[in-house]
Amino acid sequence: MERHTGFVAPVLGLDLAVEIEQSARRARGAVLTMTTIAESGHPGGSFSSMEMFSLLYAFARIDPRRPRWAERDRIVVSHGHTSPGVYSVLAENGFFSLDDAMAHFRQAGSPFEGHVERTVPGVEWSTGNLGQGLSAGVGFAIAARMTGLGWHTYVAMSDGEQHKGQVAEARRLAARQGLSDLTVVVDLNGIQISGRTSDVMPVDVAADFAADGWGVIECDGHDVRALYESIAAAVADRSRPCVVVAHTVIGKGVSFMEGEAEFHGRGLKPEEYDRAMSELELVPDLERVRTLRQSAPVTSAIDVPDPAVPLQSGKPITYPADKNTDNRSAWGGALVGLARANPLAPIAVLDCDLAVSVKTDGFAAAWPESFIQCGVGEHNAATVGGALSVSGVLTFWSDFGVFGVDEVYNQQRLNDVNDAALKLVVTHCGLDVGEDGKTHQCLDYAGAFRNLFGWRVIVPADANQTDRAVRAAASMAGNVVLAMGRSKIPTITMSDGRPLFGSDYRFTYGEIAWAREGRDGTILTMGTVAGAAVSASDRLRDEGLNVGVAIVSCPLDLDDTQMRVVFSTPWILVAEDHHWRTGLWASAAEWATLHGCAGTRAVPLGVTAYSASGAAGELMATAGLDVAGIANAARTVAHA
Ligand SMILES: Cc1ncc(C[n+]2csc(CCOP(=O)(O)OP(=O)(O)O)c2C)c(N)n1
Image (cartoon, rainbow, N blue to C red; front, side):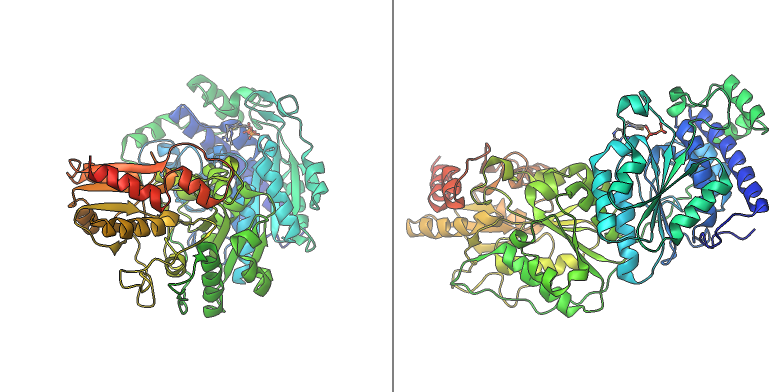
């Protein structure tokens, strides 16, 4: 049978249709076997999506022998709870052994988790938090264009998740970008956990997509020939993205499961299983597969390598010692420098209507086709960025801290789960947001990412460090966030007046730089506050107090050698315009406990409440984080 060739033929021949139907019937049996043995899982939606999965995995241009083939079509399953259906159909298509999936579904140590994971061959994006898959698909579709590899992207979705606002954000971006290589298939089974979708939250799926400029085709989602023709017609439409609204029945194929919300999320009892298998004309297989489950889970999981984008870092820009510069302008300058130094590398910059403020407007003007305007749609932007970043595109998203971090915490968490490689550059962090007030103060950028296992956080202290850190982060694997404030701040200098992060300096992740040395105590600081800390140290020195200033650039990963030096001084004052409990002080306290240095006094001088509207200088002074405040705090600690 000719498969994996794309939906090139407009119709599906009878023989192939029968083959798909038989494959779908076997896969339904596998779904029942794995969910019954695991005593959990989601057979209902797996059944309503079964013909959709069977056609997509049979006809998309994918290769079970090379699951990460660069030019493959991307299939995103957004309703990740239908994993039993996805695993069964992938196994039918030769991606891994069906026995492995059936025996070790939802078993600790197995890759066949309850919701689809990107480590399973054939799965492109880990989902389960509904409403994010279309955004991932939009990211993959943009990447197909930017890399020139031209694959087609398919997204399978449920109807329940159409409630989510992020789906609307993604629809609009797809239409705005003219992503005709994106095809969505919606499993419109009309049922979700709490009953009928029309009762829970009515949504007119076809009208919503049409209103945003999509082509819409409706069909019977269990008639494989009709569904094939609809998908083929959607793929053939070169003018716009298209959705196939597939009318389906939850639990389709087993009489007592059909139309029943109950089977959304429960496996069958053994007696129900036998009845269902008999209806499907399949031989019950529980005992054999149960025995297999006793063996250690077979790891069919594969690594997910990020296709590296080879980069030149370009010539660093050195900002003078006698002039204040804002880090966000240095970020914008480094971005343009990187793009100039790498004319052939696909570089995407995402924006949510703040380019002028976050200084990506220069890039936008020079490379408009690589500048992705997402509108006020941050949830979508975060996920689009994640998917782009694993597709051979160096991907930056720049936004205010509250929008790029706090607004989209779970999207960034999913980027973490997916081992993405997004470069997030957030400005207006800490108290340095201008006069916007509490709603705009991102006081937890380090704290939020402290909760996630893979994200790395960089907080540059001045324009020079920003420039070097941006260039270095571009070549770092994984998700990285650079956090900075808004204002023009002093260039950090050494005692002799030369820039600390000047021409010879190269950024190293985890580094701590000493702006001043001092044996009486240490001010440990980061970001916007660093300049004031240095001035405070100079003021104290004039008074005879010899206080060092250690500038941390990576608050979640502290250099052990330098931290030992920090903790060798009699006391430490931790100055930061971050929530005092979850930022640098927390990192220092954690480091001290882990390294047996908890006996040294480390005193927090951070933000203890949301601040007011006002100029950054006023807010810093109110929080005690200006030069006078830091010097006062240091005197108090020194003389306590
Ligand atoms: C963001 C999010 N909210 C809530 C849930 C919990 N949940 C899992 S499935 C589901 C709805 C099920 O409806 P549908 O997606 O249409 O799936 P079907 O019942 O057709 O399988 C919900 C609310 C979730 N997974 N993600």
